[in-house]
Length: 303
Image (tube, rainbow, N blue to C red; front, top):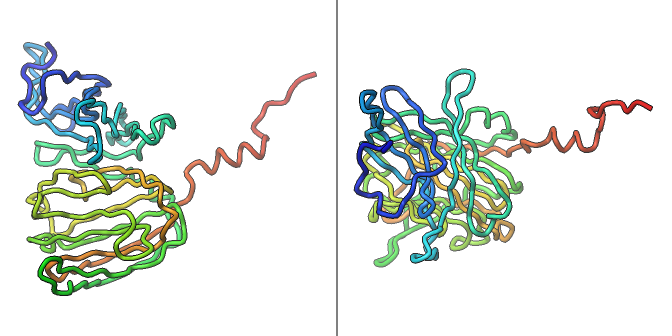
């Protein structure tokens, strides 16, 4: 067997498919899928004597929606990963966004750079070249939201801006101490405070709610740095979110045209956000679109 042992949270019936096996720093990574539960990866060591991989840690990268079938387990929203090494030695991965609502479209995720975090898990950051798509920057500093007291739902909302474009990036930079015993979030595509697409940090449940998905999250990781970067990248109905370098998630929101307001939600305790940056994003396939119109690239046809 290629694996010297299995990890307890890998259940019987899972397979290893679409494998990418590579080394980052001192650890070996097996990035793969199981056909039942989607994208996942192992962190471990290589035993050159027995020629076996010794997995030590296992992590999931696929988070089905609340209404996914619990019996037919083919809920594979993040699937079939690929990876490569760039010329400057960065390991970059992407995957098939196989949400059942768009599975026939073969949409690929944004590429992300991989590094090793605490020798136990991968760190994920958007490919730095994606920053070249940014234009028309807006900056908001020192935002404070104080919840209004109510016995059963002490919360408040702060409208950051109205978004008049369908492809954009938002970067929220939040001091790590703001996560201590706090529940808060970001609402997009709102026509009022209680509508739209919701991203909620749920400290009481140790998870992040991303639309209809629930992503387990270890909030203790945040204390290792002074600030936490929440990056949200949107292309019409497709949303990809990076929770600093610790985790990520993707979602489909077909009602993106029903509202254009961007709110911050705070619950129970005053929330302070250091900065919020907003950019519109250019099309990454602009060259292809222009080439379809201007056919100078076609070879001359000899008579």
